[in-house]
Length: 273
Ligand code: SF4
Ligand code: SF4
Image (cartoon, rainbow, N blue to C red; front, side):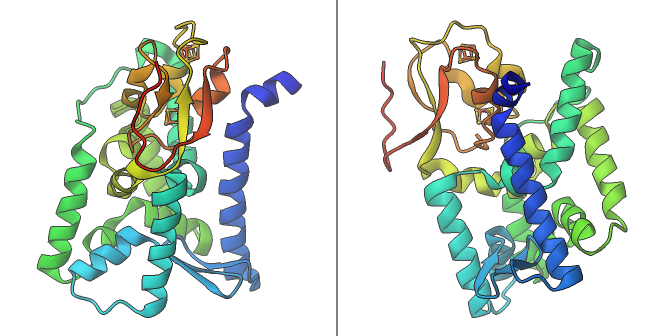
């Protein structure tokens, strides 16, 4: 039992954080708790600190909307936290969609090669959707992606009552299960794309020790962004690509402790051989 907890420690911690964030948002909406009020697009921490989705605010800026001071401050705080410290960890530690896509991926691994990718989508598609969302926001003078964002629909569904959120959640689950592995978060979600772009310089990174690695490759199938693990078997150092969600799953499963969380000095891209 203790061994099992140790082998899933970051997974358990992430679920705890995800459920707590959603719990505080639900409590704020339904019972007036003041820990975290609002939703993942805009919320207020302890009735004082504004927190806003920087990608939504950027779309509003492109749409020509006047950005209120609390939205601007909230988005800069969130951007600063993830951009300087925590990388793309919003996707695996906060966003509730991650629970759906992790579940689909787990079932996929269970069925092995039976569930092949039926459609090929480039992982860079999400970056093009980021650009498209900003262009459409400018053309139509409205935050374009926010109108259709599955992430917004699901998290608002959880906080304010499910409605359409259940259907969207099921669609994402089936898409990841039978169409493309890690299809939504790893290929098309522009919010994930936006966080991946800003995460390139962040400090908390996964560190690989080449000397301890036995090349068992247990880390690759569990990684939702396995292309970031190219360093495995080659050299020691930090995983520098912004697509890594800092989920810690690779750290959990590595039997040799060749992977761990580390703090990278800003702008240090050196690999240790
Ligand atoms: S799980 Fe650990 S030992 Fe196995 S390949 Fe990955 S880093 Fe190396
Ligand atoms: S490299 Fe590790 S921490 Fe980063 S996304 Fe993959 S499994 Fe998660």
